[in-house]
Image 1: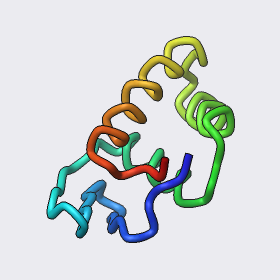
Image 2: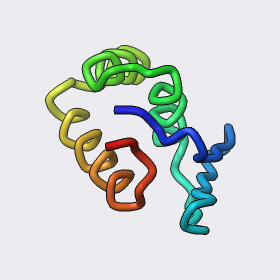
Image 3: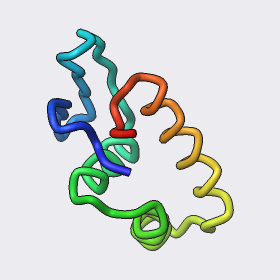
Amino acid sequence: MKLKKNIATSAEGFVFNPATGDSFSTNPIGSEILSLLKENKSSSEIIQTICEKYQVEPIHFERDLDDFLAQLTDYRILES
């Protein structure tokens, strides 16, 4: 999964899609996920990074990541 190239993000979690004019904000973990997506990290790499940093069980975070990625897909933030 990758962010579309024209998507603007900020360190504070603000996301703007100039193609649609849509914008939204994420929480700090959402912002970290967006940064990892910009680095072309895979889902498994994102899970590993976040779980190690926040001492979360992968089984719990994986479901949340799937939900977040589904939202990004709905907002047309991710490349197909």
